Length: 292
Image 1 (tube, helix red, strand yellow):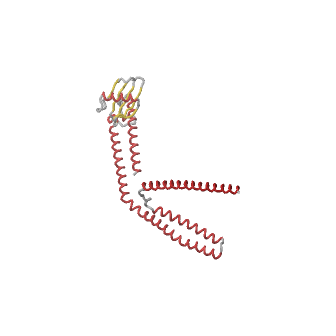
Image 2: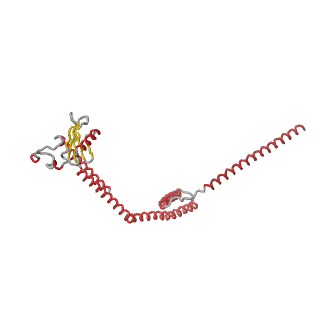
């Protein structure tokens, strides 16, 4: 569907470029001939346009001076635009400063000569309506295709993916079961190595057996752990956080710490008092001995 949308978008872009290119060629031809199709024998001359072009095209032109004064206007080849409308279009274009573009369905081209400014308008309503109609149809086709693909994917995706999902689940189950089965002989080999070491003593062969079994056990545990991580579908369980209980516990711990600190201060003061008493008794005893 993305490719279809790109193709339709490219076709619309090319169609629009073709419309603009054809209208510009026609406008340049009109500009070269003073804003009108010259009377000539089309079948006898080599021209790039169809002989029916003068009869199929609807156009008008306006000549302005440098200061914006209208010198002349030719609206004889179009019925939807009168003199006042043509002048309004021309003055708006002259004010904008653009040399070509669109005003509604009219493609215009500005020629700035030394004595006047000529603006030629070409009616592109039919070609633009065809372009917009094709664009709308393209959008509807692309939208319908996307919706159809989405419905098909929604209806048949489970059936298509089911074999791959079952194979993946079987693979994970096989890894878990094989891991548990491998752990048993590894444990037995490690135990046998311990028994042999008790009978024969330590040697490099038993050490190698023990190292390899431990390595295999670690690899098997890692494999089982990864398999269990993929099998876990539910995340961590959510519980209500007991904020009031935590606050009360913290407050109790603070009170306990304060009480312990007070008790430690009292004990330190008692120890200090006992040390003071012991020092006094010792000094008194020494003084009595010296008197004797």
